[in-house]
Every structure is written in C-alpha cells, then in structure tokens.
Amino acid sequence: MPTWPFLPHKIDNELLSSFLVRTSHQYGTTAYSFCSHHFGTKTAIWNRDIDRSAPKSLIQRISDFSALSCKSVEKMTLRKYELTTCLTGSAHSPIQGFAPWINAIGVYHRDRKRFGLQYCPKCLQESPGFLKSWRLSFVTICQSHQLGLLDRCPECRAPVIPHRNHMHTLNCHNCNFRLDRAPGSLLGKTSQMHSLINFQNKLFKALHGLPVNIGRQEIPGRDVLAGAHILLSALRQKRCSKYSQLDDAGVGAIELSDTSERMTVLLFMDSLLEGWPQSFRDLSRQVCLDQKPFSNHSSIPNWIDIEIKRLPIYSRKHRTRIKRSRSPLEELRSLQRRKPPGWRSQRASILMELAGKYGH
Image 1 (cartoon, rainbow, N blue to C red):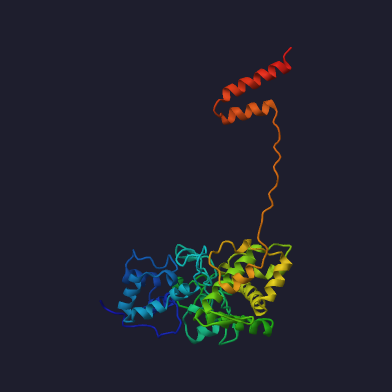
Image 2: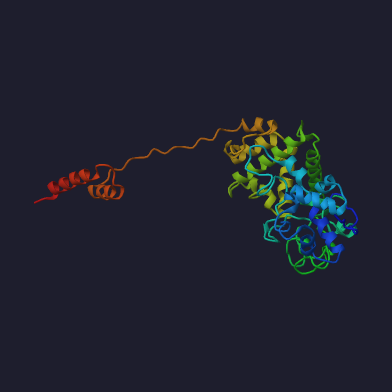
C-alpha cells in the first residue's frame, strides 16, 4: 500500500480529525474528497465524532498510509480519556451519547450543532492544529498564553468544524474568518483565572492517574473525576429558582454547556471542593439536599459516599386517598366502559334499584 509522501509537521496532543484535515489540505483537497479517495465512500468518518469512535480498522489504515504506528494514531483519539473518565454504574456510555468530562459536539450528518471544540488563537498561530485537551469539559484556560479558550467563530458565532473548511485549516467554515486572528478571551478577574487554572491542573493530574488533594484528603485520580462528576450532576438536578446557592452549578450536563457557562460551573466546584467536606455539609443544609439525587449511581467513590450517607434519606409522603362514593349513574357509566365479568347483572341490579327509587 503506497504511503502519503507529504505529511504535515507533527503537533503534540493533536486530535485525529485535525491531523486528517491538515493532511488533506497538504494535498490541496477537501477532507471529504481526501478520505473518500483513500478509505472509500462507505467508510463513515465525518458523519460521526471520529475522535471518539474511530474503529480499529480505520486506525490501521491511517497507520498504513501515514507510516505512523497504530499506537501513535490511536493516541490522537480521545479513547484513553474516555476509559479514564467513564463512570461505573452510570447512565453515561463511553461510545454512545457523550462521555463524562468530554465535550459533546452534537453530530448531525456532517454538521456539528454544539460548541464542543474549543481553541486558543495564540496556539493556532504557533501550531495550526486542534488539540485533544480542547475537548475536555474542565479545560477552559490556555495556560501557555493565560487566555480563556474560545468555542466558536467570533465573527459569525458558528461552531468550530475544521473538516468543513475548504480553503484553510484555520478558517471558519461558515464565514472564512481566520480563527487564529480572533481576539483572545480575557477574564475580568485575575483571581478567577488562577482558580480555574488550579482546578484544571487538579483534574489533569487526576486524568493521568495521580492522586489529588480534596480538602485535607488525598484521593486517587479516577475517584476524583468520578466523584466530582457525580456531585455536580446531583447538584444540577437539585437546582431550582428558590435555591440561589446552586445557580452557579448550571443546568443540564456540563458536557453540553458552552465555555463561558463551564467557567462559572468550574469556579463553583473549585470553591466547593477546596473546603471539602464542610463546604458540602453547609450547602446541603442550605438547599435541603437529601440522598435522592445520588440514587441513579450504583458505584460512588468512598470520599463522596461518606458524605452522602450523612444526608437525610428521601421519603415520599404518601397522601391518604379518600374513596369517593359514586352515584348510580356514574357506576353505570363505569360498568359500561370497563365491562368487568358479570357487569350485565350488576347493571340490571342498579337499574332495578333506580326504578324502585324513582318509580311512580
């Protein structure tokens, strides 16, 4: 099998989709035409989240064409992140839907409806590739340039969809604005940026299997990722207008939120975990939190489970139902509708009763 003689320069931490787009543009063609030519029209690539769902067969073929090892090609996918962040006993699936802590891009045919791919304009100026870390939900800051990440074109507000660019890898597919020339997103308060960076670093450590300090406890990395996600999901489920303390927890899954909302959520979580467990106990009393929002998870890390068991057990108050006696006419209509066994005899009995009561 002939290999691709012209490959773009290697970018560390680059997404597989970004690598394929840059390679196709290296040959002066679109990502659609390039992949159709080399992988066939029946190979589904751009109508799915290829960074999450690239099959082994496609990885092997990319390896053959590019002369890169299968391990190097697979490293460009999000598979390792998914295996690390997958929650045992939850509704999340590592293949279907979306995975915990990995932004959803909202695949619709070859289009993308959500703002799941972020970018730093300064990074794109230095290396024109989209990075794996920009798909992580807890990543909102570029630490190299101390800027907030962007998740859309600043000119037309369209999502970032590199494979639909026909002219240049870094152009907006919708209006051709150069994303690497976008103004950087500056945060209003330096303290907020430091908090976001610190929390981001904590979860990065957890993602790489290192223990993380939560309050005064040292927690295994995977337990931190799972516990923080379960905690956030429960608080979002509890959130309602009368509990203003939970406004910053947001609504819906964090993986479906845009970057600005996730910044607010992560600042809230950083504050909550910094004072753990007392901060959680105080918040639970304020919002009357019980164990019900956590009941959907069959496997909960111990550092969270200890605090959940301190919460009140949810008990639904059963209302005593008072059986209202029905009039003979209502009983007749009910018998006619339900037709239970022996309903004709019951109907005749009621009619006889009515005849004797109202007869002249």
